[in-house]
Length: 454
Image 1 (cartoon, rainbow, N blue to C red):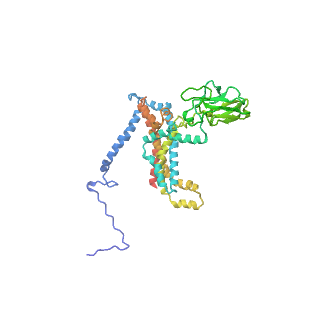
Image 2 (cartoon, rainbow, N blue to C red):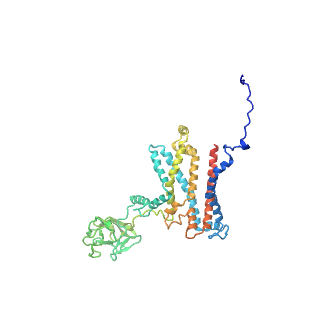
Image 3 (tube, one colour):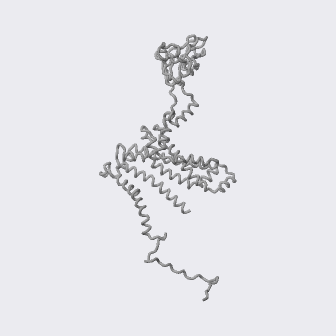
């Protein structure tokens, strides 16, 4: 038997028909019968319906009823959402969160990702910046509640702030001190004290003070009476208190401490004509220009110590909490952007440098446009997160500022389970949150589809 072989010009024979499967049923695209695929998808669809679709539908339904859940009120709950001052404050704060927090976290992540490429210890730096992502929102809230403590001895933020402030503005030497009553010193406004009569050279002026903290006079020298000097106004500022009792009020007794570093001003016609600072024993001497003037101890001698910034006060509580959020999520942004940066073609960057672009121009006109898809992912993810922010606000904000830091997720909890329980209003807030999140999610899905088509 011989076998014929088609020559080069032979045309292919007819394609044999594809046989149908037994029973005449054809497989789907994935080679699987549709009912089998449905069986595999059914558990996931059941979970999706139970955990997503049913809660959403019930929330919409419940938002149309009153607090008891029996009286139909229609859109009244939605009207209350926009009429209640607390909810309007929460909506305003949510807008601030959406605008500020994702932008700041993404910008910091971009800066960290670009800069860590240029240092040897970039991996270690990324590890440190990303580490807060391993901390729960609850733990981060507790940490920053302590960081923002008003007392500088406990709050890290105010400890740093007070340290910087005191570097440029020396604290008062004797905060809280005041003159002994009936000692010839009167209040002069602004926390200052002044003599009731003009002073003259040759008659030392006694300025006894009380309420000086023991630590402020630790190691101080004993007070000494000022000696008269020709043409000069002299005097003594001291702590008029004898340990263990005794002594004469208004007189310098043995063992009483001089107050060093107190500023003394001579004032005439509302103008300071001379100044002096007390020595270690509390004595001071003013030039002849002080003759006939009134002596004044400025309030800067007794001002309370600078206590820092009220980070959790009504005006700063929302920016402070946003700072805690950025601390947590800047590492997330940095890691994603660094991954996108690793895929940027290096020849494009080098070509821009060869064409004469400086590093800022390369970053702004080449690096950032190439990273635009990654930056979009980070921004959208963070926007969705801040729209439902709850933990940080609830934990960090004190009770006195909680109303000022209110956000929609927190108000949803308070309306549904707080003191004024009204789950109809709470459900309306939940629906409002869903409406606000939906455009962001739709935009994200469209972006993902565009990326797949490329």
